[in-house]
Image (cartoon, rainbow, N blue to C red; front, side, top):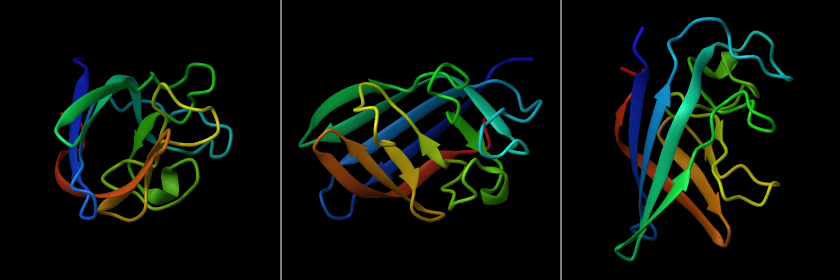
Length: 137
């Protein structure tokens, strides 16, 4: 089966920053293994990028594949109840780790069903979902 892709575009209402997330996933098969929720169901991330556009300057970050050391949560989730922490979902986004990161924060996490918190270094922004392709196609 071919790999699936999801795309998200977020815009911050306060800063005007734009964030574009591209994620390539495997097919929805067995639940993604996690420590906190063995019943979690989702698409494991194979690769991805996050492009931030701040004051017209694009910067690209890598979304590491799920299942690697320290990256077990990198997946897109079917529902809040099946996600690792059972929290709010923004079209499948629960907690995504991107690199480089400080090892302590989760750079992208859902605040609600239509907004995310983005934390990258000194950047701390809330952005609203403006367009998306989810579930992955």
